[in-house]
Image 1 (spheres, rainbow, N blue to C red):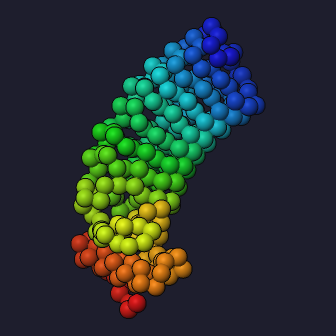
Image 2: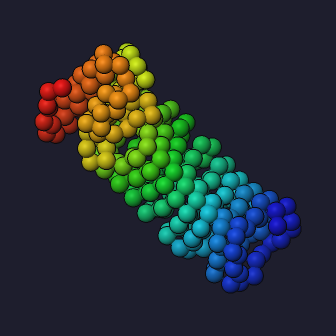
Image 3: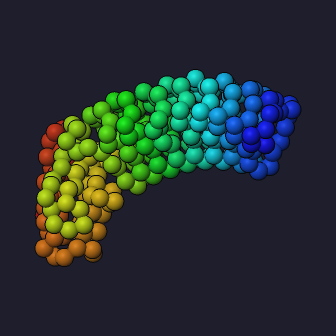
Length: 245
């Protein structure tokens, strides 16, 4: 249906697969719309979505006239919001895929935001992360004004940030090996080491470098990592039992 002059869909329509309405004249969606796959509404005249709207694939809203998203929105795939005037996200938003906020006007994230893929906040005006943010993929917060990581933050893949901007981390630079810089932070309810594409607990990091680095590099990495965690524990006033190497 893309590029057609269609302006409305029939009530109670069911689509088993994807529905592509890209650059059509569609202005409103039926209240009871069932789509088995993704929905592309990019560059349409849509101004609102139905309440408790659920999509089983990707939801593309780039270039639409939307100014807000409905409460109860659920997207199993990725959510595309480029070139919209949306400034905030609904509470308890769950996205199964990726969320890239580049070229958006969003300046605040909602609490309990859950992203199944990666979340990119690069070059955005967002200056704080919400409580209970969960990112199953990579979290990109470099080139932002974010200065602290919330204690409830969950990240399962990689954390990309500006080490000199974030106040509640401790970093170590100029190391030899797979990562020249490592840092410790409190995420996933534990002291966590981040080094290049590695993210995990201190013990897991030590096992990783023992397996993948030379003996000398592994020793240096483990010393640096423990130093980072010990300093962070003091900074955050959290207990940490240091064992010898």
